Length: 396
Image 1: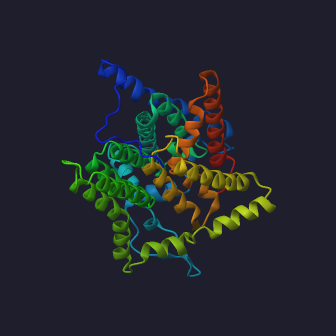
Image 2: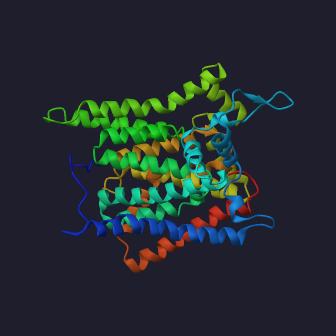
Image 3: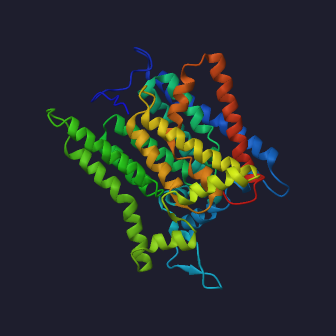
C-alpha cells in the first residue's frame, strides 16, 4: 500500500486562474450528468424488462424498501415479532435509522413515502458520483475521477441508487468521509463516519479505516510542530461509537443486550460465520449450479474479493490505503456472513475500493478505446440491475 498524501496538500485547481463556475461545471455538473445519463438508461431498461402488471415506479420500492418506508412513516417496532408457529420473523429493528430519517424529512414536504425514498436515493447517488470523482481527482487526476464516476454508476447492482434502499446514501457518506480524510479535515470526516454508521452496519468498516488512518497520522506526524493531535482522536472515537450505539439502543428497546444480533440471526437468517457459508456457496455453484443469478453472484463474490486484494496490495498509486482498507473490511462483512446469497450483489455495492484498480487499468487506454469500454460496462451494469428487480422474482 502506498501513502500518497502530503500533509496539507490541496487538490489542484481545474485550470490556472479558472473561474469558480468552470470548477462547478467540470467537477460537479459533469459527474452529475454522468449519473443522470446512467439513470436514464436504467429506467429505459426497467421499462423494457418490466413484466405484465409491473411499473418502473413500483419496482423501485419493493422488498426491504417496505421496511425502510415503515420506519420513516411509523417509527420502529417495539418488540421482537413471531409467526403463528412461534418462529421469530424479521422486523424493522434490523435496519439503521439514517436513511429512514432522510425519507421522513422529504415526506414532510408532501411527497409520498415511496417517492420520497426514491428521491433520497437519487440525490445521494448523484452526490456519491460527484464525491468519487473528486476523490479520484485528488488521487490520480481529473481523468481518473471521471472514470471512477462512470464505474460507480455502472456497478452491477447500481440500480439501488434509484430505489428506496440505503446503499446510495451510505456510499455518499463514506465517500464524503474518505474525501475529508484525504484533506485531513478530521472533524468533518468524523461527522460523516458517524452518519455512515447510523445508516448501515458496514459503517463500522469505514470508522475502523478512519481510526487506523488517524493512528497512522498521529505516529507519522509525532515530531511535526502544529500537527493536529486531538481532532483525529475525536473523529476516530465518534466514528467507532456510531454502530455500537445503535446496537445498544436496540438492546435497550428489546430489553436484552444482544437484541439486534438476535433479530439479525433468527429474524433475518444472517450471522457471522467468517466466510464458511460463502465458500460453500461458491464451491457448490461452480460444481452444480445452472441458474444465471446464482452463477453471477458467485462470480461477483470471487472477482470482488480479487479486486479488493488488488487494491490493498497496489504499489502503482492506483489506490490510497485507507480506501483499500475500508474496502477489505466492507467486503469482509459481506463474504464473512451467512444468509441470503441472492442479496450479495447488492451488498457488494458499498465495497468501493474495487473501483480503484479497474479505473487504474482503464486510465491509460486511448480515448477511442476507453469510451466504448465504459459505455459497454454501463450497459451491462444497467441491464443486470434491471433484470434483478423485474425478471428475477426473488428478493435482492
